[in-house]
Image 1 (cartoon, rainbow, N blue to C red):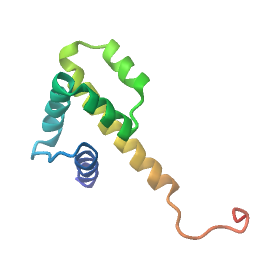
Image 2 (image 1 turned 90 degrees about the vertical axis):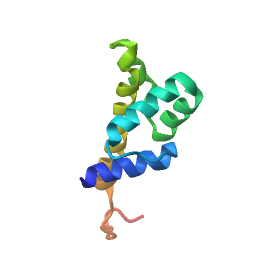
Image 3 (image 1 turned 120 degrees about the vertical axis):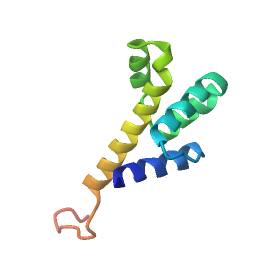
Image 4 (image 1 turned 135 degrees about the vertical axis):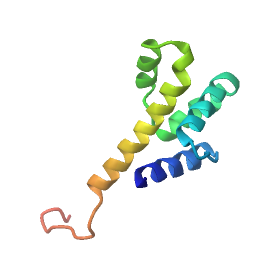
Length: 102
């Protein structure tokens, strides 16, 4: 559940929304809403979260339009997970070895 809470927190922060109990379904619906009503806001959200434009193009080229919101939402979730993993991997313990000091 910790993973979910981190993802929810990041989505709510970046998208400026409050997700409901069934947060994944709620997020899929929100992305579908943006596709149909505010595409510019969707593009800005993808940019802020750093989802590759090429990845989105590839996903959309290989699917039906009715699944677009779900696929984009899942790509956003995946990117948030990747960013969290990278932060944890490269998190410093506060100690720097003599070799790494400048």
